[in-house]
Length: 122
Image (cartoon, rainbow, N blue to C red; front, side, top):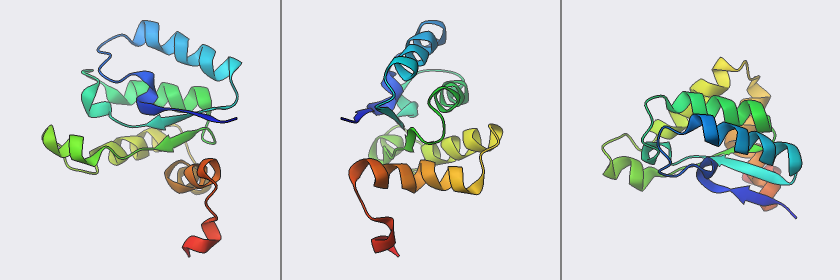
């Protein structure tokens, strides 16, 4: 069974990187059937969202993370609807992701987890 952890398990968590990061690392290590959605960072109340995104991607790998839209909340909080996607893309690039890995984060992983045939999307 696959489990999907929404919002990196950090929704509205605040500046708790030192407690959050080891917990996420342990979850990734112990539960290979957990996939993480990278979204809702506008609600986290942290100064550097990239630090959290980078850690999650490094910990779970490019094949166990999914870019997540929270567009209506982004806009309600005064951000562009795609701002979270921009942050996820920047994190992937900082971590040296290949084009294929970025495509997996933004499409392929979700299709795999939710059983969508990518070839049907073309």
